[in-house]
Length: 368
Image 1 (tube, rainbow, N blue to C red):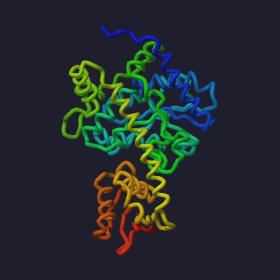
Image 2: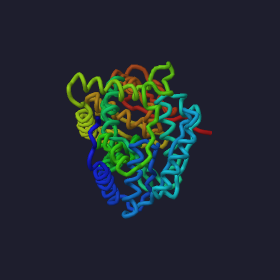
Image 3: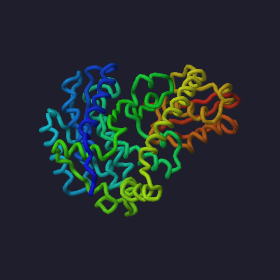
Image 4: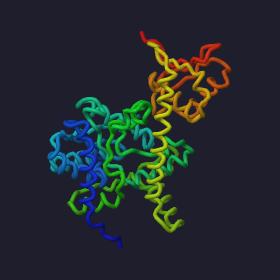
């Protein structure tokens, strides 16, 4: 028998209120776009915000996304709309993804499509990260899963550091901070990131909220990867983590979430240092970004590659598609000084080295 979680609703509300107070100091009057799938996590978040936001200075709207994965998904999305309206939301957008955006069941494509749709909806209310913020219901369990998924892919610290409760706080105004140059996390709020998933389920039960237990989130559910195997996150959530917990004799989720927090602090320090080097090496270039790298080359690879990343992103490369192999290629071009490129980067950005010099140019092709 599952032990009843006591006081979960209060913990949800305290976590939400703490972030609202923090946000209110810097962005009073901002619009909060609550992303709600109808699951326990996002529905508990939406309910807490409906209770608390009217007492603050924010405008509150919501959106639900229909991935079109299952025949009943459209009706389910409409039920979520109805539930949110009953909670007091006056505007609840229903965002439908195309088959290309949903990826026919592929998690990565679906996630990108979902975030694009939410960002487009948010743009109706102003600039993301200052005038409007997207509020997401990720929990500590999601953070643990993200860390493990990053480890299984052999990803670097940026992926293993996981998600942030707020990627656009006052710290991110420093040069090179994650969430400003990349834009990947600025404007996204995750008030529940330090709470376990069991709290959101218990809060929905406490508040009598009709949350949806989506079968797509289970390994034997109707949505599969392209090769017919279970979706990775679903398999990790229901098979991998329970097996790890049994093997260790302890719940690994809190420790994995702490690992992400520790890595975020280290990542911030490295990004700040890289940001300073980026500004020092950057030269005026109306056509893109030019770096004079003679002094920078004495720095460790961890700093250099962050500078290449900042230059690529500033020139217009897509953060979500920028890969280690591309940064390695730029580093070889700069340090070995063999060849002049170009190295093709996502977003049609290319990196070239000026022959006989220490200059790297990051540019997009001319338009028109």
